[in-house]
Image (cartoon, rainbow, N blue to C red):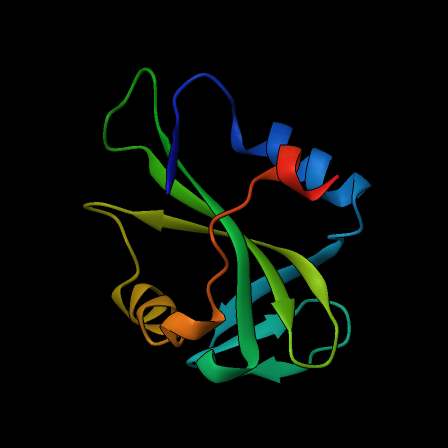
Length: 113
């Protein structure tokens, strides 16, 4: 996982959107949800193309992970997960339950183009 101290999450979200990762995924009721179609995904339906870790420059408790996601039905998008003291434990558990085989070699935006 890459640590991103110098960039804000939105910088990378915009770059991935330009590469076709346009779906915004939300976590709700133990599923990842496509915010537009409302399709719900279980951990085994999700593939992690890349992920980036961020730590707040002014507040060390401001920590997040940006996941770049593809789904079994071809959806492509992003999900921002907070972690640390304010993390949603059920949401973090969902990402832990994604099979390791569903994780890429941790490519980043520079390797996708």
